[in-house]
Length: 225
Image (cartoon, rainbow, N blue to C red):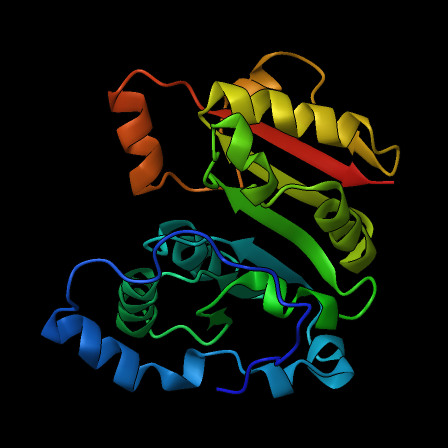
């Protein structure tokens, strides 16, 4: 895979690999190569050939990404996650379900996000990102003003950006960043709109753990004006 080589690439914080990959994980990575998104395929023609493209940032075990692709076969899904173990698990699910409408980028999404054409995505999902709760680490949070502006550029008009978190500090941070941006409109009308998981999202391992530990997730859906 060819990556962008530039001094502009942001530094990635956190682990890229956890425990040793199992034989199944190694097999999934070897056999699932055709589902790996390569940088040089991000052309105008790639995006024009698909009516609806949804990007999920940080797909984890791939539960939401794979279930979404299974349910919506007329849509195309892109997933990005820098964690090797997550890539292996997600690829196994893709292979097991024989999907043809999904590709993944096994690296930091910020390495490719600027290569997406303007107004090329219908939706972006960011489910339970690392909150980096300490004040001294707040600049490590993915949701910064600059990143939100990039998402605005690549979303179609009235496209949506869904963000989920169970962390109190990040909840406040998300609202602060989006309320300072007049280009997006928060879709919540009543409390259940942000208390309940949207219909187009599936429960993940992380959400189940969050609920078991009595942490109530919040679901933010912002629409591009």
